[in-house]
Image (cartoon, rainbow, N blue to C red; front, side, top):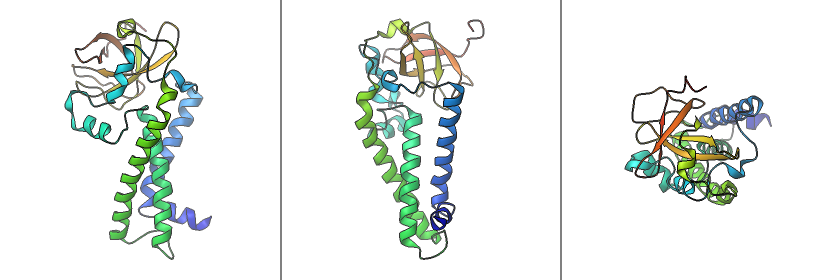
Length: 218
């Protein structure tokens, strides 16, 4: 056990150890604050019109990030789950490889450590994509909801930023079911994870256009 802790705090495993601690901290805070619903079977694919929003993850508009997300199949589940799976898989793989590559001490030499870190990142992203594909059926809501039904509702941002080519959020419909949707904002804003925004329209590609101005509505 002491060897595992030593390896986890050494290079390169400490990178993924830090990510894993951040992920654990996020979920603890989210659960205690009530900002997430542990019954996630209605979070992502809203069926009907809204269900089409999930298929391309955060990569609308041909952005490099969106293409990357789709290439690794990371668009099937919320980004917070993607991050958590990558962190957990990365920690396990990097710690295991470091244990095999070193006979004593908690760190590999720099060159070996870099190779382990890069290999671990690719492997954990691949695993996250496979997990997303397996879990995708659990993110399907029972009732179809049209995009128009969500216009005028307030959503909660789940990504670190929202701009004209990237953004994800959660919104509740009239039946209090949660939907994980793609959002865009064409004006300058300070929207971050946890911020609230008003859904004002649906663009030509089916993404929800949001406004950060919700002061008069909350």
